[in-house]
Image (cartoon, rainbow, N blue to C red):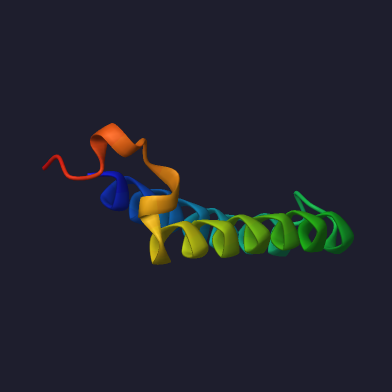
Length: 67
């Protein structure tokens, strides 16, 4: 279940990056601000990817084998 939620979060972060591009293209965001936010979402994506690659490090030990 935890892994599924991480994947959902990663998908939402990716979708937000698309909306940041849209906001920049429509001039709601400056290119500089869009780049700053984009970098932050890339950082979040890397963190989520790392968590998905080893979810056992991020779940309580008493819940690791429950399904």
